Amino acid sequence: MESIEHLAAAYDRWHAEAERLAGGLHDLAQRSTVYHHLFAASGRNHVFPLIAAHGALWARGYFQFGMRLGAWLSLPAIVEPGRRARLLQSLQQFADAFREVNRRVCVDTYTTFHFTALYGDHPSAESFVPANQLAALARIHHARRRGVELPDDEKRDVFEAFFRNEQATVVGPSVTAATESFDWPLLKLIALRPVIRFAYFPRGERLWFRNFADRDNRIANGLRAFEIATEVGWDTVEARLRDYAILPDAFFTANGVNFEQLRTRVLTA
Image (tube, rainbow, N blue to C red; front, side, top):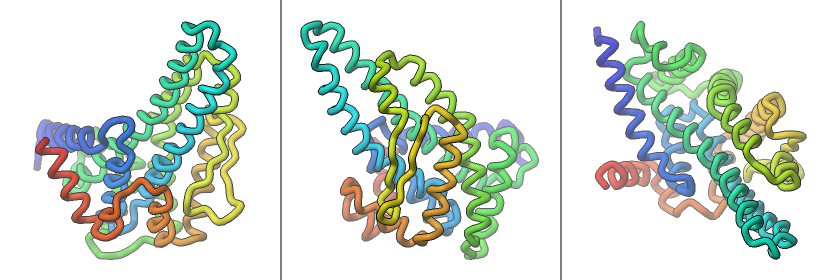
């Protein structure tokens, strides 16, 4: 049986690869390709990364709107160039903190999926992957090896295991830190009350936030995003990634090949 040192080295290799594949803060098409790879490689059972891809692509437009709004709201400070520059820099840092959250979630999701595909049954695997995620990934890998797609109730269990863990370990602490350091009360109030409409949502469907910094509010809306996905069907959720007009045509015509080309290009750069 492999030693824990062997497992640690393997985990570190997958994590280093994930860091490179996740790209920089603005590499949304690249990150979404990685997310979709995980969905496809899981036999369509790991739906958490598919919904996370929608989150990344939707946020691009939201942050663009936020920067334009910030530029307009900062106009009264134009007579104080230093103050206006500080306000806009604070807004940029706030937006970048959220982009970094999505990047870190991508890294974690890629690492745990590929690590557990090889070592998920090892007695020491729990030293590297939280127990609830380890159990969820074991279910995914078992179904994948049998060529079985899990029913939606089991997909929800897997989704919730990942979603709640990321909220506790990555999203929550990062959002709290970003919110506390964002010194622009008016724009902070606006930014923490987003109205989200992913491309797969039916007409009129929205996720309303009273306060994005509230974990319970985020969890309730995240679970609702999953429920909407089950209502419209996973084929629709996957196909509607095209609607953001960010991903290349190769993503939709030959996604597996597209990912392997991306992986080779990034890892040999």
